[in-house]
Amino acid sequence: MAMIQDAVLGLLAKEPSHGYALWQTLRSWSADPESIQSSSVYMALKRLSDAGAIKVVGQAPAHGSGERPRFTFGLTESGRDRLARWLSQPPSSTEQLRLRIALAQPLDDLGVLVDWVASALAETQQRLGAAPADPRHVAPVDAWAAANAIALSALGFRELSARAQWLAEAHAQLQTLRAAASEHQRS
Amino acid sequence: MTRVLSLESVDVCHWRGQRPVQVLRDASIDLDAGELAGVWAKARGGKTTLLEVAAGVLAPDRGRVVIDGCDLAELTTRQTTELLHGAIGLATRQGPAVPDLPVAAWVALGLMRHVDRRAAEQRAAQALERVGVGAVAGEPWRNLSDSERIHVAIARAVVCQPRLLLIDDPTAGLDMIERVGLLDLLRSIAATTGVAILMSASDMADLQGVETVWSLVDGHLLGPPRQDATVMDFARPAQRG
Image 1: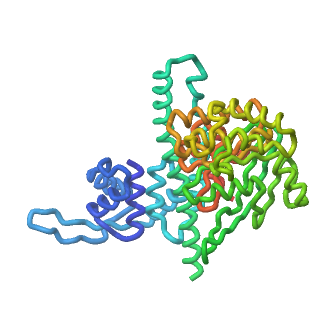
Image 2: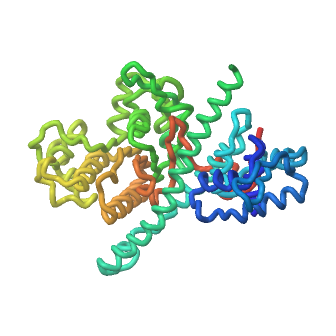
Image 3: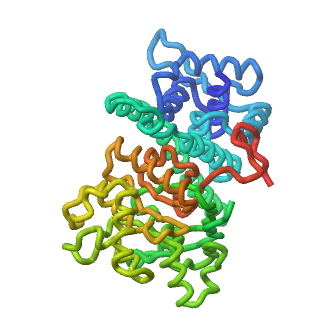
């Protein structure tokens, strides 16, 4: 899961941390916490460590006897480079956008996110506009079939419009973050 | 396509008590003849303000409003009034000021500036039939359902054969079947008469089937991709300039 690796890098850039804490934070950010397994976080730590992007910077004592000690990880130079590359690219999904917003720091350039959200919103709005016509006018169908067809298509569009509304709000949120960032830089 | 409405970089600031609220920031929108467009915003999100600016009844703090090629800022008051009465229909849920008036008479009143009473009544009856509420022509506004009210308001707006039809949140309070029927009606009015329609909605799902959809958030109007962008543009790395 490349996305979890990137998210772990983003979290470790803020402060060194250990696997369990990273897992908890990622769960709290996800729209579907159950989908984030602890094993995938530990696997991401192993892969990143093997690739030289992170290294052990400390060791917390174990809570009880028989429990493994907790390793605290931090970024290496190459990890920082990899994170910078990830942050400079547009997100590839709304789930990734959520992560990027959660990881955003005051000094980050949010322009790439703002642009992506605007385009994704435009595309969703366009799909919303391409709704099928009223079935009652397309073919002579009975009232039950027409009502059924309308309800089915409404369900699909409910999902699409929820996504569009979320993107629109995310756009506003990013603009607010951007304004706060420039305040931050001035002070 | 004939351009009917252009808002160019429009700013509007309202005072809500002591606090200034920037309702529109650098908002631009283009609407062609026969086009059906919708704007989504939250409650108190600036929908009505946007429609008022487009209708020429609210002058923006900054930016241009061009209706049918006329820049509203360059017209005299008299010319503006003529343009607003002839070229623009605004449908809201306000209803007639006289509560007991049969809605057919209310629709006809909108025409009496230009035609005699008999012709006005005839055209009002036709307009009510056209939007599917001929049956309530003799009823006063208060006896009408939400759906009948918005249909009557649309009839009153289109009876003058406007170039631009603005409708404020027509789908609010309508059930699923009524919403689909209303949008179908609007599409057919746009296609047959060539009027450009801009409607607002407080639920994005109500804009299902509206050709061009815009979102108004925090004063920013977010619409279709720029002319030079393709639909899937967002999948590629954004061009930063």
